[in-house]
Structure formats: structure tokens, C-alpha cells
Image 1 (tube, helix red, strand yellow):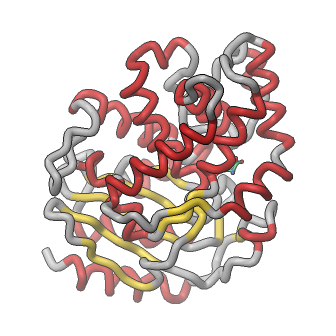
Image 2 (tube, protein in one colour; image 1 turned 120 degrees about the vertical axis):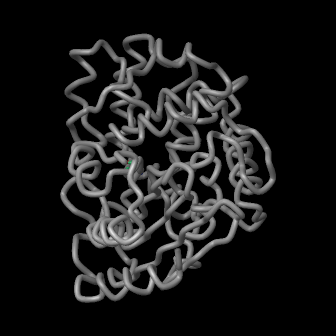
Length: 307
Ligand code: GLN
């Protein structure tokens, strides 16, 4: 299969749609991103990264970071994670608070904001949010084999300044006894995780282990067990795009995770990891052009978990 040719065809297909969707505007650093940006990268078994467009430009990965913190928490605490977070699609917005009261402070899944805040809480030892953030950064650099990966501290500061909703979610969960660490400590890590800046190439490479049963196919390092890898992919498939997850599964048929920076990470089990970036979002907060590009890619490659 000639992935470079396929990516060229995908880029041609999305060209008339470039700039569609609404760029996130809750913080200046996201609002000022050029809506016409488009990049896509596919990392394959041997670590080769096929790419097109702005695939080497770093963008704010936002909620895509939740996939990595979720994997790390599963490694750290195992199945006890499920005592404090569910694994059902929410059918609600990423920052919704309504379900939390009904469900007594237990968020629906690890890929919505409330769930990721609980996941982050699990990753903090001795109240040291800096150590957790350094650990995550180190893990991403290792997985992507790229020491240059960094956090955009301007984005992190803005996340905190505009973080009233996330603070509300966290305090609400704390009131049900579902957080161990202090709310501000947890959020200082959470906001920095949202502010990680990666390119499509770095992101696809960093997530490659999820396409190969939890083992990096290049370095042969086992990162998560095969069973956990399948489960992470299952949660991405059912919950990776908030109240847009069903539509995404229908259209793309692969596990994925979107972020409000306009990035989408998608896993094609046994084939590779795909990252796409285009800043304009649909109403649920998934990249409009990114989803179109993924649809075109899976049509051309035939990749699907549904056979
Ligand atoms: N920083 C955003 C938030 O916490 C991330 C949301 C997202 O990417 N969907 O609200």
C-alpha cells in the first residue's frame, strides 16, 4: 500500500474544505491559530512516518493527552482505577457537570474532563504535580523518540486562568470524596497536560504502541499488556469524542481521541497510528476537516476494526 500516495489523495480531497469549523476561542493561544492549517501523519510498524501538509508543526494536543495519562494510570494502579471512574460513553459535552451529581462524583469515563482529572489524581505522588508532569513528558519523549517535545506554558497559564469549569468539576468530585490530592495540585498538572505541544508526526509515533498490542514495534518495549491495550482502544472507540463518539465510530470505524486544539489521534490496530490536525471544530469539539480526512483515509486504506 502506497501511504504517501494515499495521503496526497486525502489532502486533495480535503482542500476545498480547508478552514471549515470553528477554532476554539476560549484562550488567545488557540484562537489565534490559522484555521487553514492541515497536517496528517501515519506511523507504521517499522516506525516510518508518512506525512503531508503541516504534519511537523506543533499544536496544542489538549484532550488527546488523556489517552496517555489513562494508559499510565492503568499501568500504575491497574483495575482499581475503575472504582473511581466509569467506562461508559457520556453522551454529553467534554466538560459537562450534570451527570456527576446523578452518579455521585464518579465520572463516566477517563476521556472526558472530569474522568481525566480523576486519572491525573491517581498519577500524583506526595502532592508533587511537577514530578507527574515531568514523568508524562519523559514518557512521551521516549515513545516518540524525540527529546524536543515540550509543554506550551503560555497555553498552560491560560488554561488555568479560564479553568473555572474544570475547577468546578474537580471540587464537585472532591465533595464526593473522589479525589485524594488537593484540587489546585491536580489541576496544575491537568492544565499542563492539556498544553502539551506535539506535531502530528510526534503524536502518531508516540501512540504507535496502541496499534501493536501495547508493545512499541520499533523498540520492542512493552508499554501496556495486550489486554489493557485492547481496553484502551475500546474506551477510545466508545468515548473518545464525547457526544460525537457514535458518529465518529460510524464514519471512521477506528478508536480515536480528539482535542479542542484540532488534533485527532486514531489507532488502526495492526497497521499503525494516525494523527491529523486542522483547528476548525464541529459542535462537539472534534476537528471538522480532520474527521473528513480520516474518513477519506480509511476509505482508501480499508482500515477498520469492523472487518
Ligand atoms: N483544555 C480543555 C479543557 O480542559 C480540553 C478539552 C478538550 O480538548 N476537549 O476543557
